[in-house]
Length: 101
Image 1 (cartoon, rainbow, N blue to C red):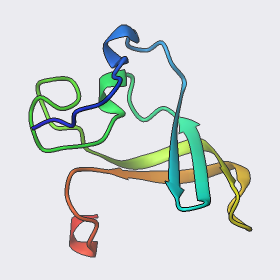
Image 2 (image 1 turned 180 degrees about the vertical axis):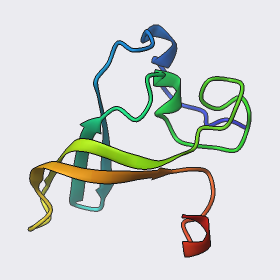
Image 3 (image 1 turned 120 degrees about the vertical axis):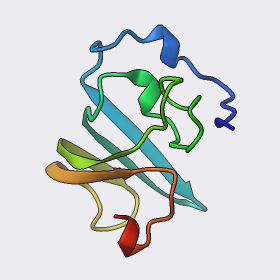
């Protein structure tokens, strides 16, 4: 089944209307915030990936493995903050063992 979000405003965001995507990860008292250029033009595809066809656009699972540009990182962990990186989005509902990447 698709993830049950407390708030999901993705349907109110028009395709091609955003140029950046950001994610925040918190663990105990540590955090990392990563923002980047878009890897999709569909806001319904930037949530938690899952294998159910009702995830993302409602027709197919959301899966991405591609380069992204203009990555900016902010963190309270020393050495993780920086701007203008090129990164790779590995975003799929499987585990991240080497055979799956």
